[in-house]
Each structure stands twice: as C-alpha cells, then as structure tokens.
Length: 158
Image (cartoon, rainbow, N blue to C red; front, side):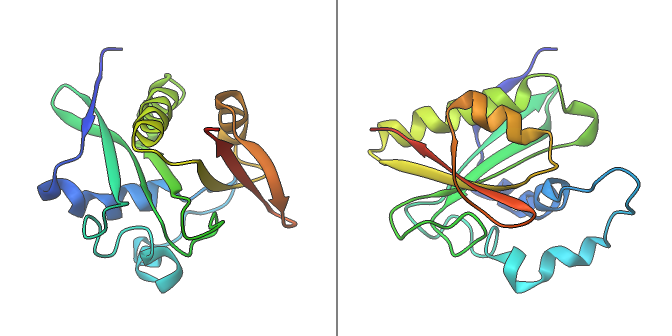
C-alpha cells in the first residue's frame, strides 16, 4: 500500500478529535463508546487548543489524498505524562488501515522529529491488552510503570 507521511497542517487540526476517537482501545466483544466521550476533560487534553504550544507536533499518513492516520505529541497531563519536558504520544489509524505498517512508520517519523528537536525522552500509555504495545516495544519504548490495566512507556533518545 502506498502512502505518504507529512506534517499535519493547522487547518487539519480539527480532525484530531476523530483520530482521538479512533485511538480509544476497544477490546473484542465490547461495544464502542459514544463519540461524545472524547469531549471529557481527561481526553480533551490530547486535542484542545492543539498547535498553540511549541511542543505540539502532528504528522499524518495519506492514502489517495485521504488522511488515514495521525500521530501527535504534546506535553500534557495525560495518562502517559512523565514530566514537563517529555512529550506524550497519541496515535491512531482509521480501522481499515491498521496492521499495514503505517502506524510504525508514523511513530518512527515522529521519533526522528523529536530527536532532531532535542527532546531527551518521549512517553505514552497503552492498555496491556492493546496489540500496539508490541509495536511500541519494537520501536524502543520500555515500560517504566504500570497499573492494573495500562503500561506507562518511555522512549529514551540519549
């Protein structure tokens, strides 16, 4: 499958809410939550006022002129928060474009950008049952904390 990865433009930032919804891990056999769940404050930290901080960065994957995936980072008090200098990841693909290598390419490209920008670490939170956890480990993220349901993972550039 041919795709390109490019920076998300400010006019496209409004699409982050849709990608935030797609980022919600839904275990097999569980009904998806209503779309409105993304407007809860603990989820809005991922998208509200995106682009207003120098730490906000977003990339998209495009297939046939359609955005099919997004990865974005910002320093925020989210589930993957480590400290005030470490950007947290969010990534999502439209379901029919998952498991095709696009997510890995998005993550690798963002990691390259963060390294070039001088960040020392990046972080994320992932549910233990989420198949993406294996991808994060392969990319070099390591577990630095956990709850009953989630891992807190960090990538070290240094």
